[in-house]
Amino acid sequence: MLTKEQSRAEKIFQRFEARNSNPRSELTSYNNFTFAVAVLLSAQTTDKAVNKVTAELFKIADTPEKMLDLGIDRLKDYIKTLGLFNNKAKSIIAMSRILISEYNSEIPTSRNELEKLPGIGRKSANVITNRLFGKDFIAVDTHVLRLASRLDFSESQNPVDVENDLIKVVPKRFHKNASDWLVLHGRYICKAKNPNCKECFLNDLCRKRQDCIKSILSSNSFEV
Image (cartoon, rainbow, N blue to C red):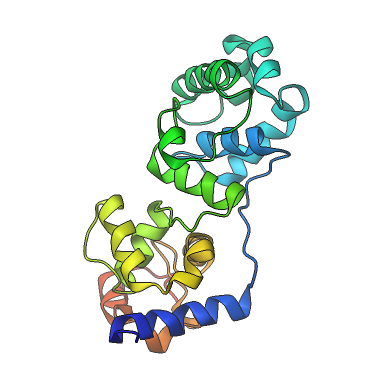
């Protein structure tokens, strides 16, 4: 039997499902390796910016072996427009080397194994195992963190705590797509500075709507 909070979450995610039954990551990739690289590159960077650089990068380096052949200096040239590109380049090269030597050039299916790879934290590992291997993990990025608070699913600002709170309240059948639904909703409707409450299909279920309006009412572009 669902709790009161799970019942509210059920209604919210039923609406997400009705509008987009198969949400997908907006990162462009061609195989498991390129998806993992794209996820790594997306840290503190927009998907649009990542897709712009990987459009050329993945033409010549779509496997760990090709990435190592490319080398760190040439890799940096491809991704230099992204934030933290130096560290990301080091992580991608190191990850490629480990994948070749320890995983037969394949992306490991275990979240624990993924988190051991350079540049792959819990959020990235959740995204990768969710999308590539169908694991029901909920990845928490800045959008999910914000939506979890605004929808009153969690009071924490710690990503792991928010992940655990979401796992408890969101019915399991929605776990696989929960992150993508929340990310897309946060990216296009429930935005950080100017949430478009007028177009939001969760108005009647959003406990924080009035608080949100009051907190940013000074913004002329805020839509109610």
